[in-house]
Length: 353
Image 1 (cartoon, rainbow, N blue to C red):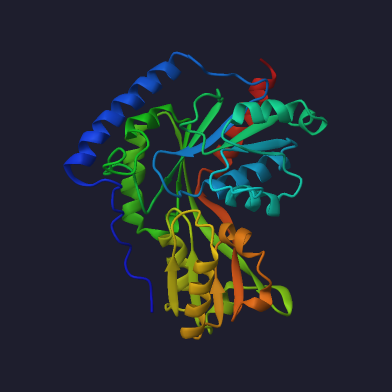
Image 2: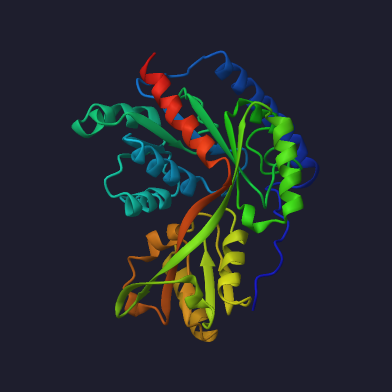
């Protein structure tokens, strides 16, 4: 069974009711943005802030983008911290994103709580916090309580915002006109669309945000980490080509992941299980997955890095097959050097103020 063509992303509340509520929501967002534009209620930290966010609900690749910036800034001699809301965290357990960051950067200073200002101030007051010289806001475009020196907005090439609508008639957190606030716009998942569609998207972004730096990136699988009862090993993505591969994910926009899994598996998957974003993988879900893996005779279960952060607690021997996690790298087709220069210069400029 192969994944079907990407279905229309249904709005939370369709029809006339959704449009009425969206109009009301739009007025609230407009009022809120005008207050923030005037500086009301905005807190300026004593360290430069770079925000990575988006216009819409669902995934656009914020975690890979923030991870890319963490590595870029560290390579430039900086010591960033990451602040996020921590959505999806449960009693005593970190959110999917927080666990993903910790796995890649074990020594990364991290704030994961709804009140990011208090969390950051508390972190800055610790010996660990004294070393921090810049802040990366994960999902920060709408979190305008914190002043930022650089606003980076991500747009998923597979789900552009221009023909979408405000919540709940659509999936936009705020109107496309808000792109005018962005200092940089990064198109993600460029690998998943045709070149002509990408060109059209770039043109619409340049119209909406003429002063913003525009970059284009793709999500590339650079290899696989394979978990089995015999241990953990690394494999090239070609390892999947001769296997019966079952794909499972619980992310905001699953379709690029499923398409990449299908390509790696030689054009056909044994099956798919798509769960809601941040699904906690409760026992009933795990039993369903286990049963499906057996019935499809899967050789390999492939899951995202975020989902593996939750599933890794299950001993490998409990799975009826091997589990593969793609090593994801954000690779730029355009604008990588310019974005790096903008980020490092923004931090340097703050230090001289």
